[in-house]
Length: 306
Image (cartoon, rainbow, N blue to C red; front, side):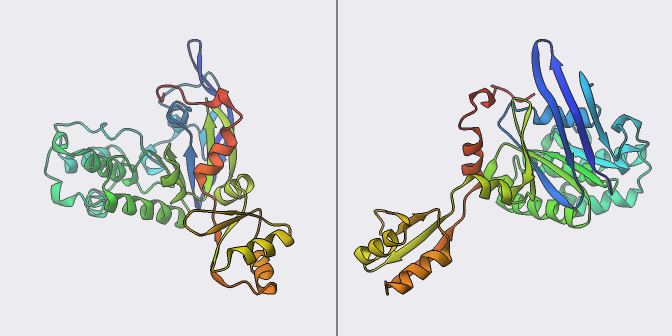
């Protein structure tokens, strides 16, 4: 299978360093979320992988080869970086036909992708009449046209309606399940948490984390349990007696920090405390990210992504 390998990658624009000595690998068979604020260097890194920019130092390869060395690259790598890349005067079908012809992709594949991405009903319309969401779908169709092993998508849910967002999540996970290498850039942590298996996190062009998403969250967010009872006094006594730190909330539930459900349940059962609710409260990707960056002011976002 084909991976994306970034090694000691650096990109300078004059005195400004957009990508700073990055090293990571994007493996097949999972969706890797490429996370960071606007200005973190995500789009620049993707452009370097695709040979659209030249690195100041280091390498970015696909299957061990630079993108520019690939013959018929659409058959190996599919990418959506800019939803406005398609020529506005062409129809959606003609745009895909031109791409297919230039990479020896059978014409029937165009019709398959028009159907798969939901734009077959507007295939005869000129691209300039498309909404942003429809342009995104066309860009995804173009990325998948050559049935590539590697797929790079930059903010693919931009402009999509709720149905479209669900569709793109399912599409990305389906591609990974087929064994493809999927790298998806986003600055939206809630959205990334809905589809990513693995995270590569950037800040100011530097690598902050390269880890499975669940491990990233669990390592940085305190485990906690949500509990509700009809006897607050008995609950407080039982938990404090076993060394648990519990905090009451205005709506009547309690949060027990640094605890597991089974431990809290055991304490309350032993003390015969009536329990109305007992559940683990999962940490969020946003909480973990904020914990990661809280002490790193140098990694705050710059005004504009590059």
